[in-house]
Amino acid sequence: MRAFYQPVFANKDFNLTWSPNDAEASKDGTLAYTFGQYEARNGKAISRGIYTTVWRKVEGRWKVVLDLGSTALVQPKPQN
Image 1 (cartoon, rainbow, N blue to C red):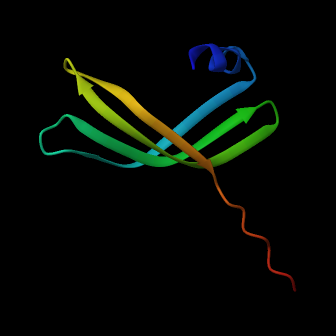
Image 2: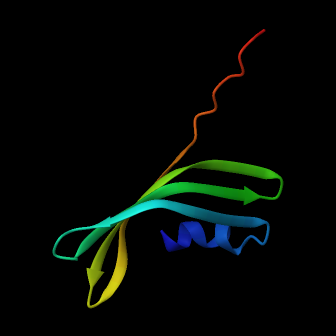
């Protein structure tokens, strides 16, 4: 995975931002999830969508277990 994404993140025109809407942890504090919106820019190209990340606490630090994203569906403009 690192080898696949390394050129993407090395690209100076690429920028990824995300904004969590909510987060929740399990009662025992070992698992959690966050979800919200993301925006990826590569030069003039912009992709927006939603994401969910699942976290696990390992030796006192949160580690990503699963990270999913889906581009937002664009609703067609109504015809007059």
